[in-house]
Image 1 (cartoon, rainbow, N blue to C red):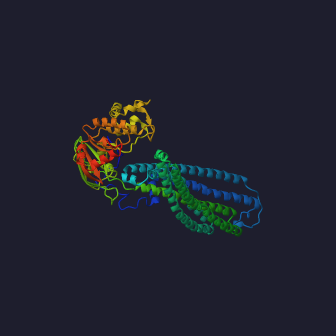
Image 2: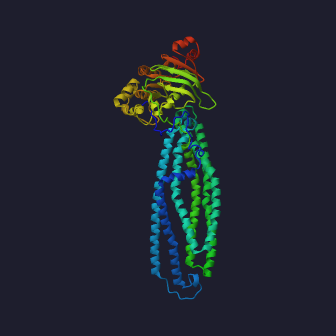
Image 3: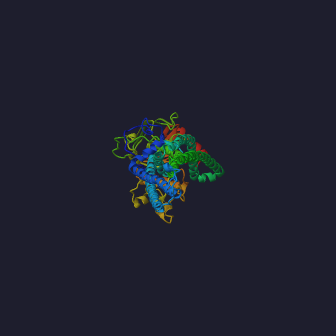
Length: 630
């Protein structure tokens, strides 16, 4: 296989456009309704979520028994010390002897209370473990979806978005969402259940006192909504700034040699400081608004306690409630207010998670590459005949790059593509393997329209050596075999010998088992280029696309590659896209491009004699003593 391709979903129809729909047809805007979609992610886990709710109910029910038991203990002590009227209620103010505290009953109640609170804690622990498991599964699935999405995005997406920004959406934002759900989901379930349970128990003790606490709910809700609306855009700014910071750090890590070589470290530091300050300002503002929720809710709750304490004392003195009833009510009121405070706090923290969710969903909703054909065509035999038939393409809708281009390349021939920067040479190679979809015309491989083939099948017939060499963390042998996973060690070494990789591998202590890190540190530009050429050779493709294949190597290495290429090109169609005219003078045909059009084609000698664009290009590079000249 000449070029690896990521597994993609089964297509629904064959289409020509370069990008598929963003999300469902006629659906919401990308990333819209993130909170509702987050809830949707929990639907496959309905069973565990229901169990978490049940354990929450059990824990709250046990916690609800506590104040009743404490109220009973208070009444026993009051009666024992002050007499029958000491606890208030119908006997308030009635004379009666104090028989002393019934410590046996008090001890039994306290023991039951200890067991009740222990049981409540155990149920809460189980609920937390269940919720944590659900959250990790949801995030695991979401991260997998994000990774799979990256393989379905068209190259246009990567052209328009910084790598660090995309990386941030799949890592930082997903991690923030995980932390948010982990910290808030169980708390939210418990708080909502507690709110209902405590309200029910308060009403059972004293409906009139319950009204006081109920009236605090709308006030708390209005304040929470107001603060949430204020915090949401600030969290959005925070995570957008964080994405820009990730993009800058990725640029610095990738281009650190260039930055140092041009003495631009101070400028890079200033840019980092600007991005870092933007994250700090947005984050500080967001946390200020979010952090204000809890103290505001506590203030509202304390107002309710004050009114309940005054009215409760009056009811004890009037005999309508006992002292234990009031104590139980105040404890329930506290447990009623606490969920309101917690829900407000959760709402503040959820703003950050919802913003991250929206960024992740926006990535998941991004337009995808066009779907694969429902019934893909397969060329009968990989001869390598390529035809461009009136092809048009543009990166920007209103700016044509290639217009009405036609070109036929016969099997086994070598065609060199030359031209000035921006002429469309590299684009032509990208269109061959459908890195981009054409806007008009057809590209045929062995008589079959490439748009009717699957990308995996099409790319398996091409060997690619791109401008930017890319090696992954692994051994030299593994990197050579990247395009042919089933290759044997002998086949790998044969390809290495054909492309002169063995000339430097022989000098390494571990030979082909030498491990390269992810940025292939330790290998020279020429060595990296040779490994990528060996990778393409090993794939044994029908067509080779060599984009600037020798532009980054020294003269000696270039000569070695040219010698190897002369052998490997035998029987294969080859496209050589280069500025070094010395690498293409022996090509069967040289195609000269300008502004996306073919202006000349022929052999090296015939084009020089014609005195046209190629001759002028050759003369200019020769007179400048450019290294690109033959």
